[in-house]
Length: 388
Image (cartoon, rainbow, N blue to C red):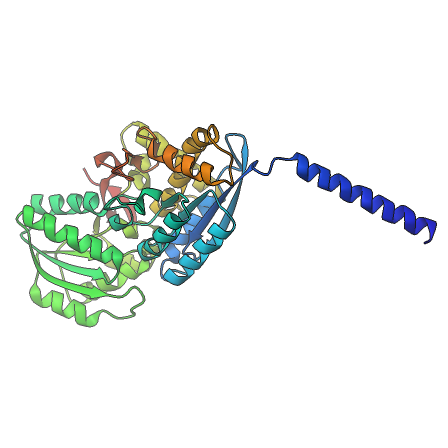
């Protein structure tokens, strides 16, 4: 062998040995892994994109430990969400965040439970965390439950003197949860549900549903849908001259809904997390937390770009930020013991204040939001306006 070749080979071997020594010296548990499945394409994209943007604002370290975020698109598809979750489990992530939409999150629950890995959902349906059982004990939720938001709509409707309600709802888990609560709470408030129509998230026409609702002539209408697909039934009802108040859910609280809906969504009434109108709130700890997120997000992505959906993703990180130090005192990341300790730490957090309000977490309730996590708004000249 040529002397220069021998020297090069020797240097390479020495470098490799140094690298191996360095790898062995660094603790394998020094990095926390978080798997994040978001709907950044497909019908849920208007929700998932601001969530993905928010992940870029996540801290590189928590409690002195580096954090690796594995972010995957599930294309608003339940099968893809399950595939992403299996990949996270194979890579031994310490926690899972996601998905954007309720059907996807429901598809993930059994998988994370089998792997004993804590999951923080940022989707809306109460069924993701209720009723509590052996599977849902691994799942936490940063979005307001259906019951809390339905209560606000039905109360507003009853105070306005409306006695009949029509519903157009997505034919999925999100729509199912809202329908159950609307029927229950409307009856308790003396409001009669006179017509219910369903549509699919990917539908391009709801003409037949709108005709049936218009024929029933409800005094008020509730549209249950998430993201820009919620514009379609409202536009169809406006085209048929419907003049009653139209309520939407917190699943539409982003600027894409305003942009796509235009004049057709003016005057819409809906319950939302307080972060959407944080600047309009009176002084409180919730306002402070909300404004902190708003300022961070707008500094990165521009004025008036904040959505409640990105804030749900931010809140998932805030929960991890508080729970990780507790879990680190008991176990090392990358181990089953750490994942179990992290689950316990999340459940044991004492009324954490997040951008969307306050979570009263307990072994029986992995959401625990109350009236501090909800306000009513309307759309006024293409902007969100806090209602008194």
